[in-house]
Amino acid sequence: MVREITYNAKGNPVSLIGSMVSTGYPKFLLGHDSKNRLRVNIGAYERIPTYELAHQYVYDQQNRIIADSIFYFGQYDPASLTLISGTSHATFVVNFTYDNQHRITKSVNNRVDNMPYHYLTSSYFYNAAAMRIKL
Image 1 (tube, helix red, strand yellow):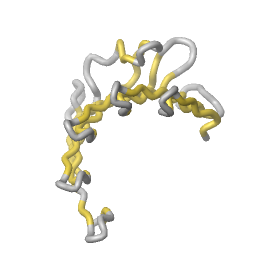
Image 2 (cartoon, one colour):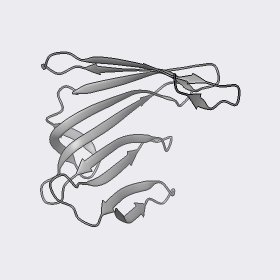
Image 3 (cartoon, helix red, strand yellow):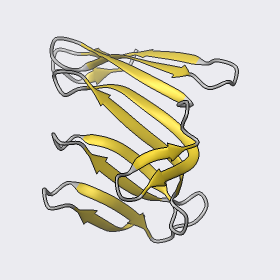
Image 4 (cartoon, one colour):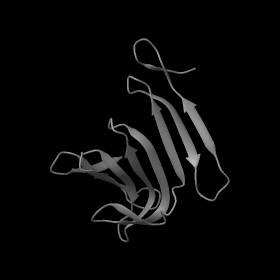
């Protein structure tokens, strides 16, 4: 349960803190780029600037997320929210494909670390009311 949400001067959320921050229950730090888009989401801990899980996002020219790089267990710079160790390779990269109405039509989850590879492709379909449907 979120106990506290902090916002920056532009109204973007920058931290989400639960009722308890401990192993398995990190606080979440949100970094934004110069266009106010979410750049990084870090599941962080208090004392040493370490994270359990972090996401870095890449956008296309139409401001759509086209890649979500997922990292596990490392350190970050608290001032810039830059991942600085344990992050030489993402564990997973999820790539997104969109249709002409800017809806996600496919996500491809690629495991890219040194573990046995794992790929998961999901396709998304929409009805006439633009609602996602399950097949």
